Image (cartoon, rainbow, N blue to C red; front, side):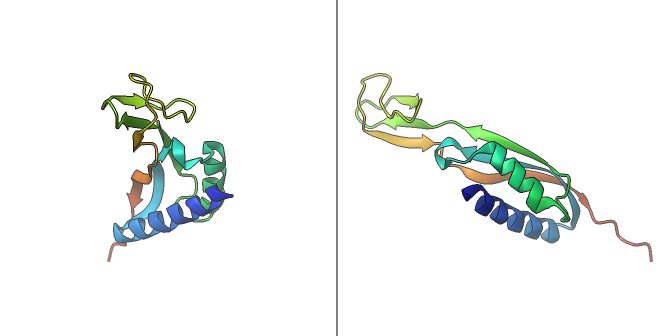
Length: 120
């Protein structure tokens, strides 16, 4: 399951970033996922819940932003959205296209609570 490996990496990054920024609890995470990644959002959510259990992300909300596939025709220069993985220009019907978006997979942001310092 590809989603498991993705979420494993996501949790490593979140844990390091939280530690580096004095975050004691992660409340929400926003991830951009391009359609060309072939990931199942439902599986990503399930894996996230499983990997977050017992960590500083336990109970955190996972917001997944779906990024459509867009391309630019190398023949006529028209930009277009790729529907059904059909890389055909909507203007000239050429099939020589450069992918502009849809490969994304990154943490856009996360929200957390800072670690409270003990009074001393």
